[in-house]
Amino acid sequence: MNDHFKIYEHSRQRNVLDVRNLSVAFTGRKTKKTVLSDVSFSIRPGETVALVGESGSGKSVTALSLLRLIERSGGVISGATYFTDNDGQTVDILAQDEKELRAIRGNKISMIFQEPMTSLNPVLSVGFQITEAILAHRDVSAEEAKREAIDLLHKVEIPDPERRFGDYPQQFSGGMRQRVMIAMALACKPSLLIADEPTTALDVTTQARILDIIQRLKEEMNMAVLFITHDLGIVSEIADRVMVMYCGSIIEKADTRNLFNAPSHPYTSGLILSMPAVGSARGKGVPLPAIPGTVPAVWQGARGCTFSPRCSYAIERCRHETPLLQRRNPHSFVEVACHRAAEIRSMLGSLLPWVEAGELGITA
Ligand code: SF4
Image 1 (cartoon, helix red, strand yellow):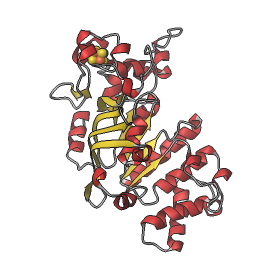
Image 2 (tube, helix red, strand yellow):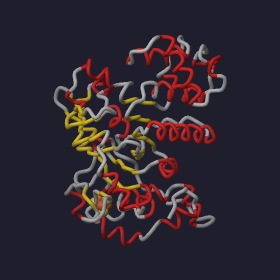
Image 3 (cartoon, protein in one colour):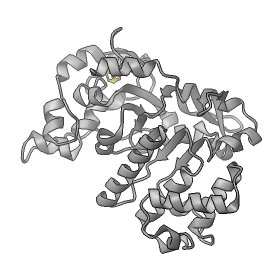
Image 4 (cartoon, protein in one colour):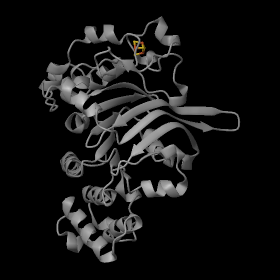
């Protein structure tokens, strides 16, 4: 099945998540700072969608807004977030009251974070915490919940799960704690898992194990995954589709192969070419090309295209007219927010030889 047909087939399935024009602002007495602007995307069952970008681009704000956790920090959300659960029931998360939200959070939509110790309670055993998650949302006996918790520990490859059930988080290594978090997140068989940089603090071997576990369980449960990361190497290994974020907006969306083969936005190509695995393939002693400058604070984005101060392709129009995210052409599923996307695409040519030589795991 070719890529185009695969995407077409996917597009006919119902979405687990349909996010439309999601925006977040923080307001003071006289100020309003918009940190997320008109973010729209969807995720289908069994699909892994990666949200990538540098620190401060708005990735975690997006994740927290999906479950309305950003409201606890004073964020005001607008737009719509339609969620369809495994029974086919669709709700707009932004229209739910607190009781209805509690029935969704940790149950139908789960989250895992970068540092499990901030989510696990150090004075309760891991077994108790997983069991508690099951009992909070499902009508099962304590014995049944314990059996399921041990089974989950087994599924996330904790050795000797019956014995480790009674151990405390601090008795586990960082990688093991992340596995426990995954077990907790999957306790109620969610339709959607939001993974916010879950492997950033781990060494590469442990990271690979955790990614394998997430992939395997995603396939077993036909679960959708929104994977948030700044690491394009991880994206190339696990994602079906990718969204690139900059300054609180999505600036490019594509299926993974297309994104790495033929990025359309100068920021995306800059990110790919600055990866050591790709850069080293350009030749010994050739310095890695870096994107000049830094990401401005989201609310300080430049007038016009927010990337224009760093973009070597910027023209006068870019400095006063904001580019809209739109399809590269009517036959393409790639969307890009750049006034010069078509020209730049043909100037850049294909990056695939560099990508392949860098052994990123993208197949032609
Ligand atoms: Fe660069 Fe202009 Fe495209 Fe923005 S719109 S990425 S400044 S070429």
